[in-house]
Structure formats: structure tokens, C-alpha cells
Image (cartoon, helix red, strand yellow):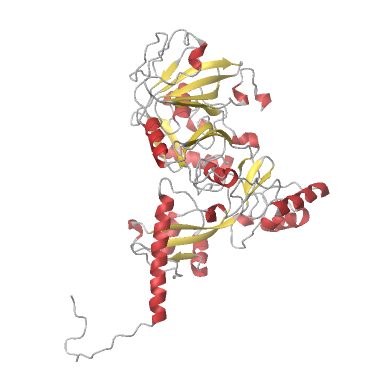
Length: 521
């Protein structure tokens, strides 16, 4: 203890100020609120958080131009102060760590009291302390996804199995929240608090499994995650082991000896088997190809990987199913579960997925990364990917909050004029005829804002009364062009998952037909 009073100054007894009962109550309430906020935040960050009806009711959907869209809504982002932020000014931290908006916008939010510390308004020079809870209220706009419905393949008391359309993320991430499989199933199918057993990339369609009980979810997740070795195929086909080098392709002659091998062969050695179907560029070899090149994550932030000796071991087996003269349909059997494994291995082999916006691009070099030849450092690759995204708007597809998928087209004044004239959605341009307007008004009477927590469908068209506009929201000041529904599809589909005592399969997509051509898109 250090006595800070002057040495020769007489000690004067200073009465302790009395704290009013109101202040005690306020401080107690603030403490309770902070504790509650911490518990809520930890729950939301848990692996299987579940969501309350209050979360589901934040907003609702509407369908327009073949897209599922979300009415903008207010949302509070929360985070606890990280160790490296302690002692720094709040404005400097937000300007550096959260670059989705300029520093001026964060300064406005701090002064307006929408960006708070422990739910209290602070000055822009406030220095962060340990355990400070930061909360930022934003007017949130979500990216549209396909309006193609999620179909339930199987449902019992333990599991729910669905066929996920391309473009819809599995769970909330980045710019997606309500436009996710988890929220759509809860809001439109009344299937709430599902536990994710595995995941699919946003642009990948197909089989998706959820557990309805923690025990079943853990059991099946363990089966899928800890799959080991390879099964021995029937009819005398020998096992092919991991030591195979993709650069020296080794084929299995006359595979398969019987077409039935492409059918259910799941109860083999009690293992889990996954089968995907994709359409790749060029004429894929007729014989089975096994790629065992290790894969390294170049950047988690933008979600990009490459073949690298420093990567993790992984193996994928490929077998051509058909060839139409320009592209091939290929059966893919991943033996491991690395990020973007099938797409990266196909890129390495020189047969990228036809419409893969990331791995079928010259940003990986003139040969698009074939044979691992990229010709640039990881830093240069990431830099070029971000630069190309700014021009072409295709990166950040798995939910990077700092990357917007669509270009702004119209300013606020033109946007308001358009809304006043034709009542159209702020993210689309076509007007509505009298008959369509009448249908829209009838629909708006049937669907109430934020009540889609049972089996209520989304609005069939945009309803202006449900649209909220915030004068300080950047997203409200621009107009985004809609993607075409065909732009939201990648020709990679999770076709069949099977394991000990269970097997699930989806119908094959239209692009997997042997006689399909680009004109059929």
C-alpha cells in the first residue's frame, strides 16, 4: 500500500459518501445485465447454441427474382475485449480490427451511443479494460440466396436429413444469419435447436445431416470425423492405400467390374462413406484416379486452400461417370474431410469444377493451379484474390463480413424515388403491375412481420411496409444488383452419406445427367 497524502499534512477524516439506494439498485441491475450478457454471448458462441424465438422473429423473408431475401433488421453484435486490445482507445480498435466501415462511422456510433461498453455510452477516447463487453447495434442487410426450397429427405426422433440447395450456408456466419439452413428450417419447418453433424460449403448442394438430440449428434459426428482407413470392396477389388502419389496416377483396371458398386455399399467394415458428384472441365480419365496430395489452408479469412507439402494428409478417389464432349461428370469419394478438398484436388489434377468461381480461375496462374503450379507466394495469391474480387465480386462467398458480393448500383435518392414509384424491393429494379400490386397487398395481409416461426412460407413478393430504412446505414444508401439464380450454383453435390446402420441419398441434380449441356442451364 502507498500513502499518497503529503507527509506533513494533518490528517483530516473524510466521511465516506453515502450511496443512495437508487444508485445501489442501478449498479446491481447493471451487474446483473452484464452477467446475463456474458452468459448469452458464451451461449451464442457455443458449438450448438440453439436460438430463441426472439432471434427467429427479428425479421422475415420474401421471394423475388428467384431469390430468397431478408428484410433489413436491427441486430446487436457483441464481443468481449481481447487481451491485445486492453489499454487501447475504443475508436482505434474498431477502426483497425473491424474494417467493414470507416473510422468516421464508428466515431458516429460511439457518440450516438449505439456502440457501447458494458451497455454504457462512452467517449471516443475511452480505453478498453479486461472483460469489457462491447456492443454495436447495426442495421443489418443479408445477402440473397436461392429461393429453391430445402427438402427434407428423412426425419425421425434422432436425426433430420435434408437436401441443401446451393448458395445457402449451413449456419450463421459473416453476412448470413436468417438466410441459412438452420434459420430456414426453424422458421419454416418448425425444426429448432438442431445440432450440426457435418457441414457443406455454401455453394455445394446435397446431403446435410442434423441431430435432434445431443447424444445422436455426437455419435454420428464422431463416426464421420474419425473415419479411418479404407474399406475393402467386394468382388475381389483390393484396397488402395494412402501412400499413393497423385503425381503418379495409379488406376484400377476395369473399375467398377459391376455397376452395382456405384449403388449402396455402405455397411463395409462399419465405416462411414461419402460420395459426391461434380461436373468438371475436359475429358476426365476413364480409370479410377486417386489423389493423395496434402492440402494447406492459405487463408482462413477469405477461405482459400492449395496443395502443399506443408499441408495435412488427405485422399480423394475419383471415377468418371460420363462425358458429353466438353465436360465430365465425376464421382468423388473423399477419404478425409479437409477444407475444399474435392475442389482443390480436382484443380491440382487439371480438371476443375466447371463453374467453380475460386479454383477454376487464372488467379492461380495460366494453368489455373494444375499440378500445384501457381507461380506466386501465398501473400501475393491472397492479394490478387482480394483485388479480383473487388472487380468481379465473387470472393468471400462463405461469409466474410468485410466482403460484399454485389456491386452498388444506385444512390439513396434514386432508390427512394424507385420505391415511391413502383413499390419494388430496394435490391431489385422491375416495377409491379396493378394485378401484381393487388396480389402483393393480399399477401401482406396474410403474413405478419417476424412471425415465421412455424411452417409459414416467405412473402411471395416484396412488401414495402416491412422495409426499414436507417438514415445512418451505409447499406441503405446503395442499391445492389441481383445475381442470377444460375450464378449461385456450383456443380458439386453431396450425393450419398452412409455408415453403420444408416444410409441417406438425394436425387441427382439436372446438371449431372449424361446428356446435359451448358445450354440447359
